[in-house]
Length: 260
Image 1 (tube, rainbow, N blue to C red):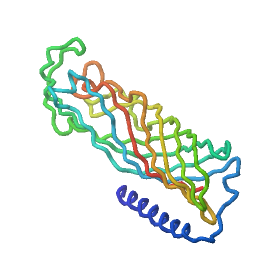
Image 2 (cartoon, helix red, strand yellow; image 1 turned 60 degrees about the horizontal axis):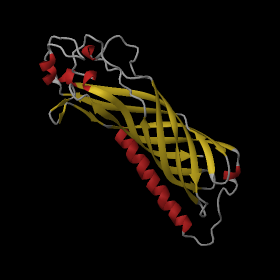
Image 3 (cartoon, helix red, strand yellow; image 1 turned 90 degrees about the vertical axis):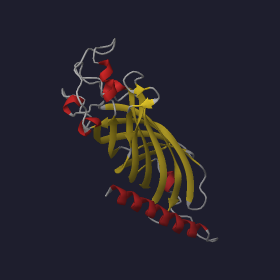
Image 4 (cartoon, rainbow, N blue to C red; image 1 turned 120 degrees about the vertical axis):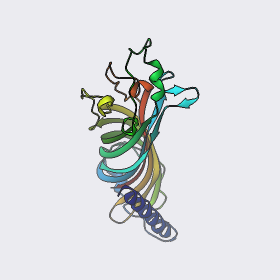
């Protein structure tokens, strides 16, 4: 379903771009929605496909063995949707708030059985009894439902007939509704925990197309969480999981279709 949605979004944007290009080749055409961007406030909505992954900084003791990384991440493709509120600042700048709901799933793999060598204890870990890691212990399927609230400053060029390029950047407040941060269980009980409240920065670029009744904007956005999302396992848990990582941060690429 997720792959189908991404393909549908890409095909829709390509078809619209081809149609728009055909319009722009008409020498004596009329500009559409000429006064639309003069509104102080306006609104809309968007649909998006996303590719979400983790940036991982490994603990040099528990997360690496020689030059081998013991923890790896696999990205996923999913979708989201949200609303748009725009405040016109001047002819070239807009301030936008685009709250949305994003769905994501990532996979972390922990090949950390070699940490049995630290069972006698270290300065950073108490002694523990080694346990054999099966496939269920080594893999974590991390599902996330993210409330994403970006505040973006948009800079756009002058309108060329029925199109206008833009770039935007800003900050995000992101709430992970499936973080498990308050759970007393941890990875030893198959529960992966991360922070609920997060902050990120975003950058975006695209082209705005004007039609008779609405403005359509296909764009590409990158979002990168700035804080460490990692919630450490309990003190008595062997260093097979979160102890192998120092930093865990979400990074995502969005293909966005905006309707205003």
